[in-house]
Length: 281
Image 1 (cartoon, rainbow, N blue to C red):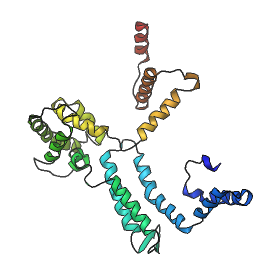
Image 2 (cartoon, helix red, strand yellow):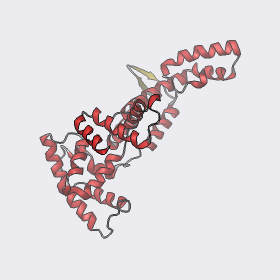
Image 3 (cartoon, rainbow, N blue to C red):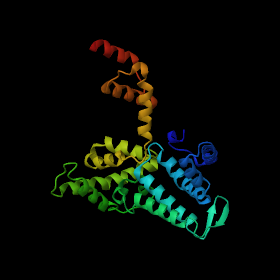
Image 4 (cartoon, rainbow, N blue to C red):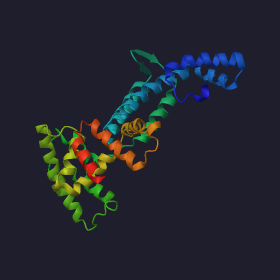
């Protein structure tokens, strides 16, 4: 039934048209009449094509695992610029064809771009550029590179992290950042650090960057993608089946952690686990 359809690809429009025609002819269904009017409107077809072109790539990108917020932001801004260049001109590029569409859906596309701009405002992540791995390498920077942004972050999160307010912590963190950025660049040159996740792992383990690591941890916690959440729910559904429906939260949490560990090629010593279990019991 039509009311149970949550979403459909635009390629199923023809199927919906056939369904609505059938409902109108057989039952004179008013909702089907309204749907049929929309689905047979050429401008509606163009709107669906534009939405598919503009949003499908963004949706796919934002569902990548381990996508950083900075990467997502820059990709979105690039796509918005491309859409404006492609659609808001007298000659619009539809795939391999060029069509004169002056006045056709111009307002709709403009509004769509403006809405996307509001979701990704300029300089939204300016302060976090200090931990942008692409900006650190291979660009040559001076001694004080991005220190100003680090100071802004300290001021922004001072209360949250219970940092001292006498200014000494800003000086300490800036000193750590100065050493940190040069070390990261050298490690990238050597191939020891290749991704943002590598950089985060290294930073959290290094005692010399204890204060700075709090900000790297915050940056890494921001998720641009819902992929990890979906993976978690999928794992939960695989573990908590109908035959195991009495699993409680703590037990469930432990099983999910074990499953994640195994997926990441972690090694499990069953003899050691059995020994621990018999000792505990």
